Image 1 (tube, rainbow, N blue to C red):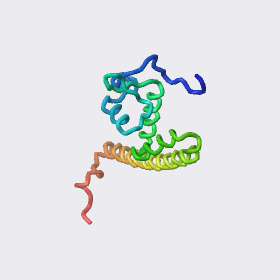
Image 2 (image 1 turned 90 degrees about the horizontal axis):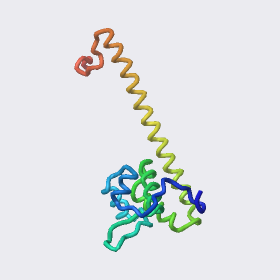
Image 3 (image 1 turned 90 degrees about the vertical axis):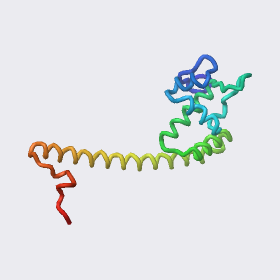
Image 4 (image 1 turned 60 degrees about the vertical axis):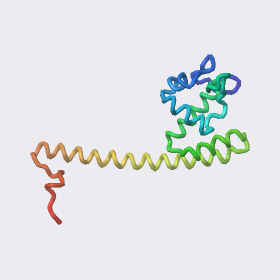
Length: 145
């Protein structure tokens, strides 16, 4: 820990858009998009008006990307970032946002597991068809109703 903040791959200096993109394995376009959307509040501009990222800015972008991967919309992410900027008084509201996002992710996980189970049944049926030289999974061979 460093002054109460976790140390996560801390860059030694300010980074340009392309450096942040490479560090986080995303496109430079994505970096610019998130900053343009106001989702990286600590990003700065140099004398040439180019974005420069310190560790705080990289941390904001990392958090944004993680929340987007859960399916959070840009609008909800912007709301969450703004709440973070408002401080500790918003912790209960932020907690509720994260709980709602967790419920949504759990629904997505359940749906994904159902798709995996469906495909596992299909694989088993295809294995049986391969052994029996049967083509029961081809819709053209299904009976007419």
